[in-house]
Amino acid sequence: MTDTATDTARGTVVETTATTGTPHPLALGFRATAKTITPVEPEPAASGHTVLHTRNLNVDYGQFRAVRDVSFDVHQHEITALIGPSGCGKTTVLRCYNRMNDLIEGARVTGTIEYHGVDLYGEKVDAVEVRRRIGMVFQKPNPFPKSIYDNVAYGPRVAGQRKGLGEVVENSLVKAALWDEVKDRLSDSAFELSGGQQQRLCIARAIAVDPDVLLMDEPCSALDPIATARIEDLMQEIKQEYTIIIVTHNMQQAARVSDMTAFFTAEVHSENDNRTGILVECDHTDVIFSNPSDERTENYVTGRFG
Amino acid sequence: MVTRLIDSRSRSAIAASIQGRRIDTGGLLFRSLLQSALVLTLVILAVLLVSVFADGWSQIGGRLGEFLSGTLRSQSKDAELGVHQGIYGSLWIAVSVAVLAFPIGIGAAIYMEEYAPRNRFTSFIEVNIRNLAGVPSVVYGLLGLAMLVNGDIFGLDRLTGGRSTLSAGITLAVLVLPIVIITSGEALRAVPNSLREGAYGVGATRWEMIRTQALPYAAPGILTGTLLSMARAVGEAAPLILVGAVTGRLGDNPALLDLGALSERFTALPIVITSWTQQSGRDTGFAAAAAGAIVVLLVFVLIMNSAAIGLRNRFEKKRG
Image (cartoon, rainbow over all chains, first blue to last red):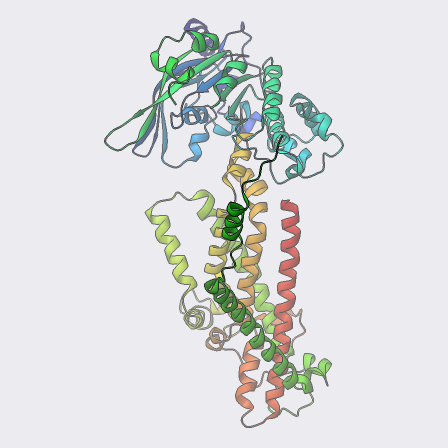
């Protein structure tokens, strides 16, 4: 873990805010002006700079604690995989990063999540702006009931962009490795695509708003091995530009694509059979799969459990 | 690969076990019950249509133009007897429902489904709206009488002109409001969550998500529900009697688009039908006139429903 990098980044942010007197561009709370100013890129930093700094994260749904005391860092231009058995809170943690849990009534997030040193759950933070910077690809491909073009153009459009949409759509589809398959039928319904194509369309849709981070919630679980391989290749290509967190049930996938792996497991409360997710360890992927420090991790990755 | 069959005795045993011709009596009985339910419905409808057309033929076949432009008369032989005043009333009642009940009802439904928190208070409100949808229409007629005609509250009679088309339209708009809210709410609830999340995921605000995803997806359902409620409003007679629909003689015969007559005394097709049926006791010619008016009302509702189906198909096509 590179706590020093984070601290440096955080220090910089505080200083900038104090000296200039204007809100730091990453302070996200100014939706009214956000459409007129060009988004400022995150502070240039060496590779390995911490993008998402999570400390003592708890998530509760009403009386039920879904995730307890999760702490780990996600670094820029790396792929971080969240693995673990069902019900261990991987998806719940993932959905904290783009404030998706806000949409669930009774969900409460406590602890610290800092995005480039800025508190993601700070008072002035606008969840809508967060989601433009931290995009998401869902478990089941969920294209909109619109044309292929309109699906990709949707994000830029809601962000207020009217010009140059064609270019954005083309670039996003190229990056998502879908352009050659759909360039002649952009006005067809997205539902006419195969499952794998639909998921790549959803990736194109997510990257069309030029996010900084991509959250992928089991993006291949509904796809066949060939479509899965295409998406894995794609992730390797786009990680030069994005920071990716992927939740996966597939350990081979985590081993193949990720730089870092976080292993989660569930504590079962014997009194009511509720499960609370905890993070066992987060380390370099090769360490997790060859020489993990926790016995539970070893049992899981060697297939003795789960 | 060598194909090896089992011996013929075992094979015939297997054949016997999978070739059984069991007669599924329960299933057949159930199916014929369902079929007869459908047939019965169709027969009743056919009898109704045929008899209404046959009875009303002397009016709608012989003198359709005069019948459509004529007015309420005391003699069925009167050359100016017709349903024009009824069409005027029903048309503007339908318009009032569209203008008042649709935006308010759909708006309330969007708020309930998309914005309001789910707690005891909101579920209490929801139960009450469902109950309101079941309140007899006469009760709404009483409400219209007190508020819009007598002006007991807020002095609204000055606005509506008392016993007028406008009072009738507002009363029926209030009558169908709960139905519009319930059907629109159900259509919105059927919008898949993945669609909402997809929109939020690329940075849509709640309003943008509703406008670009939830409403277009729910549009066919909302449309079906609202237009069914309009058909119901157009067919209501009881509340109109309380609001003061004219059953006997009505002086004015306003042109269909004459907005000035909205605050005048009025009648409507269901009232015309009721009134003429009652009068057929003393003047048998009114029976044919009532049947003719029924045909006009049926065509009126048919036009509205076809418009609804056409629009719905267009929305559904868009939905993909």
